[in-house]
Length: 276
Image (cartoon, rainbow, N blue to C red; front, side):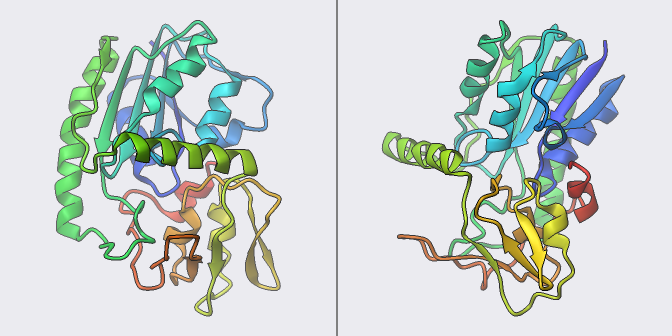
């Protein structure tokens, strides 16, 4: 059975998982979601199709929502999804089913993988995972993937409950976060990035920006206000000089100047930019 895995990855975790599944599942093709978003209709051809993506604020990334609105999954006899995250509760599988039901499909199986993270990089006290911590996480991920791929290959129904979260979210916080995400999508993402004096004009941020929001002008990056932001943090985490920062926003002070960056053990800047 042919398999297509559609992936979105801003910092490398989800790309790593997609590649590891490709190693395990015969006749599998990896397809970056970002490369398809200009199409009016995204026609699948795999008999089995999968979605691999990071958790963004309890739900699926904005780019993945745009993808799901356009997808025609009529070729699929089996559909699965894998979400990667640090540990916050995830609400996105119901959202995916909402899109798929409009196309007479539904997720047959879905899974969550806890991995190294950068989602709190702007917060006080953020710590970059150590090499030992990354190795421990990777060992757990590989064990989980051995379990997951067998379910996929055997086309089993497996709708996993989210019991492995680290950060619980109450009802009011969930409503606030999901509402903020909806507003961000409506207004075109966020506009709180900038580069400081450490910028070396290497242009990495422009290259890895998956939405094309960043443009180099006078050898410095400019985040164009009229261009959508996918909030993937690739520009922040892949800047070699840690020059890209996040501005303070109402009620939240940013600590990106003080904090390190997630070390991206599974992907280079080139791996991210080829999604475009």
